[in-house]
Each structure stands twice: as C-alpha cells, then as structure tokens.
Image (cartoon, rainbow, N blue to C red; front, side, top):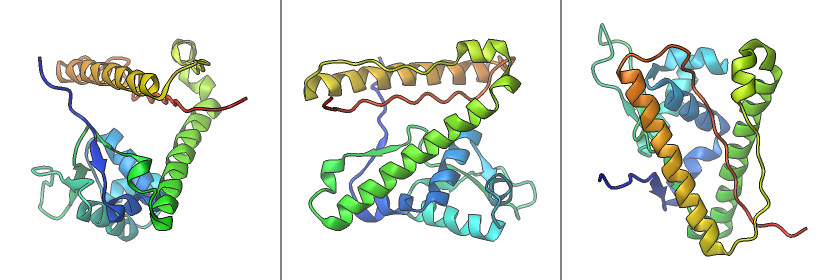
Length: 197
C-alpha cells in the first residue's frame, strides 16, 4: 500500500504571509482547479491585468507554491503555471502563535480561506437553478454536533483527509481513462472546531 501523501506543511512565516494577499489565494485556487493556466487566462477570471497576475504568480513561485508547467507553451512565449503539489498546503496555528506577527498572519490567511470558500458557496447558491436537478439534489451542506476530545477531533480529520484523497484519486483516474461525461469540479468544505454553547 502506498503511503498517504500529505499537504506541504508551512512552518516559515514568510511563506505563510505569501497568502495574506487575497489575490494570491484566489489565483492559487483557480490554478489548482485548472491544472495549468497562463497569467492571461487567470487574469480574465479575476478581472485583473495580466502583468499584476504574473507578478503574484512569480511571488507564489518564490515561496514554492506554484511552478512553471513544462512543455505547455507552443511558441515559447507563453508562460504556463501549475501548483507545485496537488496535495496542497497546510499549517498549524501553533507554529506561529508565539509572535504577534505570526498570529496576525494566521488570522489573515485563515479568514481569507474562509471568505474564499464562503464566496464560492454563495456563487453556487446564486447559480443553483442553472446546475439542474441532478446536481442540486446531489449537493449537500451538513453539520454534526459531536462531543470529542482533541485527539478524537484530530483522528476524525485524518479519516476525512483519507476519504477526500480517495475520491480525488477516483476522479483523476476516471478522467485519465476518458470518463469525462457529466464530470465537474466539486468543492467539499468541511470544518471541525470546538465551541461552547
């Protein structure tokens, strides 16, 4: 059995701060979904100048989040980009909590992630009728109230990550085999956090 691949764990504050810019977060997510794209293609999606998008892609590349996609340019003039790892990235809040600057960066990045995800879900809700019954009946929004210890919450997270990886591999294999009929990008957002009523 192949060992589970893990997201790149950010432990360096300068790397984490690369994502305090909301446009960089948006570009990374679009590039992750597209697989490969040029700055011009991404610029159309974010309504920004290609030069600005190119600048932010280079900044993400400096921090190891994106790389040039080799062999994509037909004439050598277009620069194609891809995410550096399809496993994505993550971080532990506690790695940055010992300084005000680190805590502020964690807060900014986490809020940016939540806002980006919420914006994506709002867009789906606004366009729900256009997706049709088969998709709207399949989509879900769920919340469970659980009584867990920190260790159990961490175990639950590991199980959900393994499940997500399994379904991602299933979709990739199907696409590679030419099974693209009715296949769309699907975003699954799960949150697990403590609260006191």
